Length: 116
Image 1 (spheres, rainbow, N blue to C red):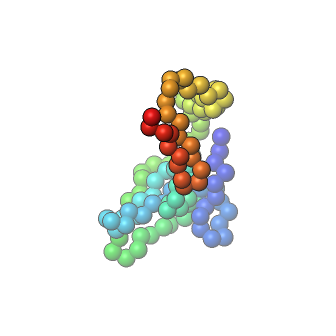
Image 2 (cartoon, rainbow, N blue to C red; image 1 turned 60 degrees about the vertical axis):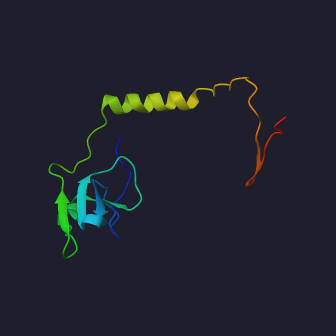
Image 3 (tube, rainbow, N blue to C red; image 1 turned 120 degrees about the vertical axis):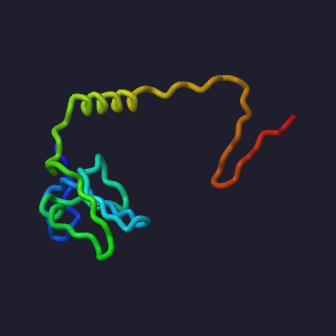
């Protein structure tokens, strides 16, 4: 199960193998393994761009040690995927039939039941 994500650098069509995150409060750029899913405010990088990237002046750059290649899927990954599919396919449980007050909602207004 290879990632279909591409490098975020303009004009680069190489597959992403690392994720760049900026920690603005600490003036630090962090390059680590490719995140499981694309996150806002992060950048996916190919191996070449991940190795050549430099931090802005006055910032620290932290690089994760090791190989940038994406790890092959493990049996744990496949089991988690199968569990998620089973959970999504499971029919919704009916709610209890207790006499809970009904609250109607229409847009931003709510109709509350009569307190009697």
